[in-house]
Every structure is written in C-alpha cells, then in structure tokens.
Length: 508
Image (cartoon, rainbow, N blue to C red; front, side, top):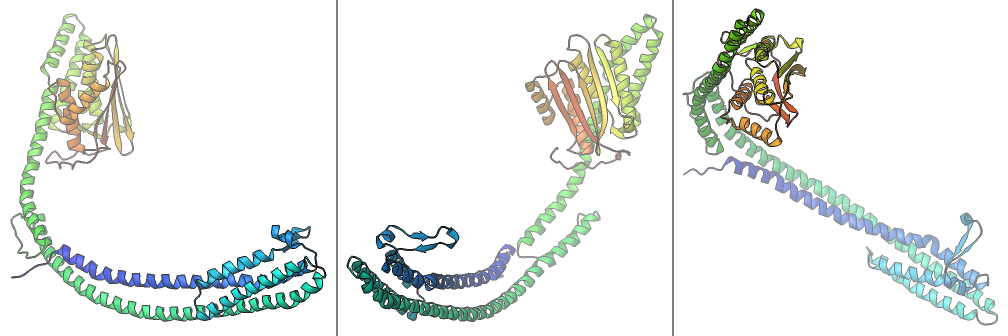
C-alpha cells in the first residue's frame, strides 16, 4: 500500500532540512564569538587598568613622599584630601594622599587577580601586592619619624632607597604583567584565526549538504505540483472554450487532489452560475418594469388630466397646451423606446416636464430650480434615476411643509464621476427617521410608495454601475433633505443584452 506525504508536510520537511542545520551553525558561531569577545574584552581591560599605574604610580608616589620628607606638605593635610598646587588650573600639580594611592592600587590589583588570563600574570600581581604592603610599612616609618628631631636626616635615606626601590620594583612588576597579558592577547588572536578557519570549513561542508538535500527535495516537490497543475490548466482552457463536461485524468496523492476535486465542483457550479446570471438579468428587467409601472401612476395621470380639463373649462388654452406638452414629454422619456440609458440632457428634460406638471397643481407651495452643468449633457445616465428622487422630495418634503417650498436639482463633475444633488427645504427628518430610511433601503424592505422608489433607484444604480455607487442622504428636521447620486462618466450606454453583474465591493 502506497503511503503519501502531503504537500504541506513535504514543504515543512524541506524547510526543516534547510533551516535547522543553518541555525545550529549560526548558534555555534555566535557562542564562539561571544567567548572570544569576552576574553578579548577582559584582556584589554586588564592591560588598560595596569597601564594607568604604569604611567603615573611611581612618579606620583615618589613626588608626594618627597614633599612630605622635606616638610613642604603636611601628611596630615594630605589625609584630609588631595592638594592642588598652582594658581593656573591648566598647569597645577595634584599632590595625592599616599595611603589612599596604596589602598586604591591594592583594590584594583586584587580585582585584576580574579581575571588574569595567564599564570605568569598572577605571579606579577602577587609581587605588586607584596610591594604595596612594603611601601605602606615604609611610609608608616617615615610618618613616625616626622614627630622626632632630625627627621629629615632619617627620612631622606628612606625616601631615596626604600620608597624609590619599592616603587621601581612595582613599576617593573606592572610592565611584566602588561607583557604577559599582551602575550595572552596574541595567543587569543591565533586561536581566533584557527577557529575561524575551522568554522569556515564546517560551514562550507554544511551548506554543501544542505544544497544537495534541498535540491533533491525541491525537484521532487516541484514535479509533484507542476504536473497535476498543468493538467488542471488544460481542463481550465477547455472550460474557457465553453466545454464544461471535459474531464482530465489527474492523479495526485496530496492537496492537489483536493484542488482537482474542488475544480470539478466549480466546473459544475459555473454552468449553474451562467443560468443564475440570466435569472438576475430577468429580475433586473422586472425591477425596471416595476419602476416603469410606478412612473405610469394612474393617480398622477388622473390628477394631471383633471387639471387639464379644469384649465380647458376655464379657457386657459395656453396652459392646457403647455401642460399637455409636458405630460407628453414626460411619458415619452418614461417609455424611451425600450432603452435603459438616456442622455443627461433627456433626463433633465424628463424631470423638467414632471416639475412643470406639478407646478401647475401646486403653484402655491412649489418652486424649483434645475442647475445641471451643460458639459454633462452628452453623458449617459440610467433612465428614471432622478425623477423618483424629485417626486419623493415633493410628496414627503414640500407638501407637508407650511408655506412655499423649493426643490433644487444640481449636477456637476467630480473627477471621473458625475454627482447629482436633489435637495428640498421641506420638513426634513430626525436622525431616527433618517436611520430608518437608510436601513429600509439597505435591507430592500419597504411597503411605502416612497420607500419602493428609493430602493428601486438604489438597486438599479448598484446593479448597473457597481456597489461603490448609489444614494447618500442628509437631512435635518425642519430644515430639509438632500439626496446625492454618484455615477461614473459614460458616453456610450451598457449593452441592453446580458449585463455583467458587478461584484460586491465596499462602498467608499
């Protein structure tokens, strides 16, 4: 029985084979570098600290004891703190407390003895510490003699012989200590060079092994993926030609088999999707038909004809002609020879005809203004986009307001889009009413006449232009309402045959 390893596991093993040896190699190098760095830093610190005493200790000690012996400086004053001689600080001489100098040197060299890197260095530090004890004893004798007569004659030989001799011996020990620590630094350098050479050799061998393993694994993995994928591409080409029945004999033991299975299911669903698209187009046509029926509203027609009759009976022949012409132009645009798209010029004429008719009926409460940029006239717009918004502004904004109201329709360019605004100074809406209206339009649920018109316009705009386009509402109670429509610029209408349903996207 054949046991297969999934593609995921193969890729994991490939990564494991490449990464783990590299991590081990890098870790080894980092540990070695850390050890060498610590050792190097310790040696440099030892040499630096010892060199400080190599330069200054003998000179400062001899000078300080000399000044004490000749009586120019009191040892008691020195015990209180260092003495600075000279008015100009740049050229002043600092006379230090010899006891503190010895104590500090003893502490520093005892600390160095904990971090020495060679046995010879340890021997030199022991010599230094012994000399510091001797120096302290000699200094104590000189201090005792200062209280006796003829102290100068007793102390000067001690300064010349004992102090000079001991500090010179300390200086010699320090120089040897620095020498041995320098030898340790040289040995460390040689060790680093040797370890580096060995590390390079090991790294080359490890990398060569990794490359062999990775190359073999990658080659096998690529073939296990590309062969079935190529067969899958052939099946996709057959689908592109419209053949949804052709099946490719694709054999695989890993996730590719799942992909093949899903591909077969997708192929079956695509055929069904084509039918669904046709169904969507039928629903779109049905929606447009409902909108058309909404525009051919019998009540609107009856009221308009009643007004014409009333004007005729009153002998207002010019008004009869004007209203009849407006009614004719209104329904001519509604029908539009079955077209879905008309020019913006025609849409403007349509809402102008509608508002003229309504102005005859509501002359006392209705005023209007149309301000659409003439540069937009030749662009195409989905038929019956603006008129339902104007009707909504009249019946639900102006009619419910006391006094005369006004509807303003504006149209202008905004980059690659065209923007229309239908605003009124009617009763407006509260925030809660506005939220409810937006929710109904989003959920496409409204039993009210105005709700259906707005939902219809929103749905048709999105189905024809895409989901980034549609309606936006602004309203304030007692101030008015503004509805904004955004559509793309189009010179030629979309095909009146099967339109592609745009994929849903987030509205900007």
